[in-house]
Length: 351
Image (tube, rainbow, N blue to C red; front, side, top):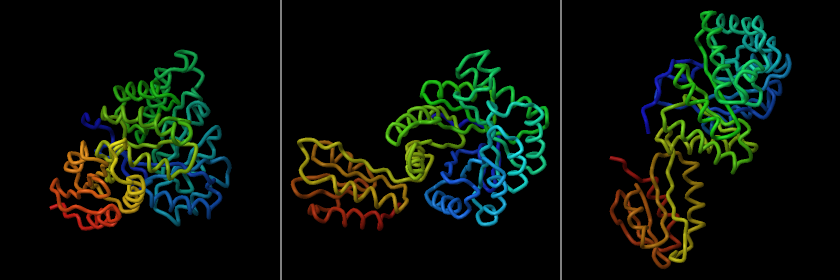
């Protein structure tokens, strides 16, 4: 993986985005901000599962004003997602929100944008320029079509305007619903801007399809050193989004997360491996660690993979060999594998 891009440091509440090796995970609430009880439940659930920032749609005055109540009960950074009505952004800022997201495609009156910038500047909170291919501002689309270049040029126009107002707490996103345009847009932006980039595929799709598309696009960008915060947008449970984010970042050593290696199984499989994988995967999800655990089904690739893991098993007929730190520890019966693996994980000494 290439060295992380150097970007400006922007603080969203207690969380820093940019100017560091880390990529910050975020998600978006399903409930409205004004539904206080449900909103707080989401905040607490998502924060427990790894979200460091949570965004809310703001559709009316009650949503905007709700941030005062929400912020009194949580220190998780909250973001107000604003479309069309700039007045809601001003209200949310005054209510204590930690960041504003605006879409240049639907708030493009210069005086209204200026009002948001001046208010954000006064309250010292950042603004994300959230540019989507599906809602491009008309001037950019007319000049360049629905392209990555159009998104980047739109961002450039707004960044220059913000800077003319002496405002620099800026985060930029350039989301499309397809992989190629997303990669192109962020790659172009990384050459032009030194502001933090919020990575994402917009409307990525249902869990399986959306996760694959997001991993393809965002993984390519992360490998290039691009990106400072991430949301994987799935049409489903937000916990699936967070799991996908953590797994993707862990693949690049950017998140502390267990790695579970298991073979795809074939005719060489000598024991019932499926239930063991399911049980250990669930255990690792509930017990965060950066250990590499291998569950292998036969004697061909099994010993080598198990040897390379922190803890591993390689199967034989109705039994398996247990490896710890590359060395065979003992032979175990099939019905003892799960208990033995969990015990080895809990007792593992990294020294």
